[in-house]
Length: 153
Image (cartoon, rainbow, N blue to C red; front, side, top):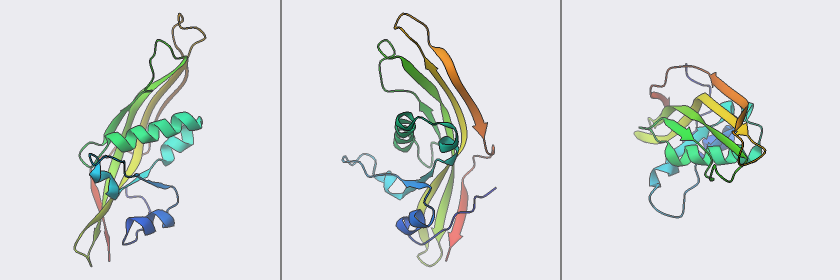
């Protein structure tokens, strides 16, 4: 089941036409050069996770750790669990869509659509207490995670 994106010939025009897509920002180091051609659709995450700081942290982890060959991302806070009072963990799966341009005869960019979220959030009052699960999310839009292609003129 393909999503209905408004596809353009460049990644910038596509992002403007689909304002819910997030472009992976180019990091300062050159290790993650592949990220320049990725757009992420985090609609499923935006629906369920309401804490803006946690949502931003999860999105950055997904952008950093996923690619066309690795569709899943394990999420966890980058803090020490022995000193923190909030904790989350889970798994997020993406379905990649490769956008191919017939006129340029090459792949232009990749849209990574978040299709499955398994998320658990817990809190505690003291560092001596166990984490109590506050929120648990297990939601998916579809189970087909195979790479699909779009063609543009």
